[in-house]
Amino acid sequence: MARALSTAAEIVNTAGLDLLVDLSHVVASGGHEDDAVRRFGDRIRHVHMRDAVLGDINRSIGRGQVDFPAAISALAAAGYRGHYSLEFETHDIDDVDRPAEAGRAGRYISGLLRAWPLPATLSPG
Image (tube, rainbow, N blue to C red):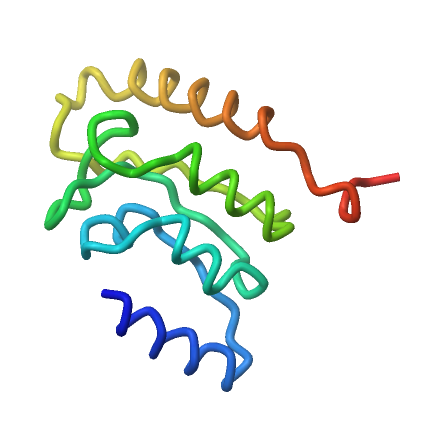
């Protein structure tokens, strides 16, 4: 995975591409979310948030191995100011439970985002 990320970083930087980072895909493929953010931080324009385990991207937030605090901390350190999207295409809950799960996930992620303010050099004002 580290070699694949290095190759991808070289291509992205050479071509001047911007990225959407999907944390579930990073973790499901054996990577580490904070490493992906460090490698691509200045190119990240959007972040998808869903939980995952190795080989399975379809877990509800908090039911997998994505380290959301580490990812958000790394994004804040990189000066990320873009959007976050919660993904609810998961296979670990019933459809009837999705509204409550969406509320729980939203509260959890919102709390994490409030805990990591923008770096002083990027703060508004």
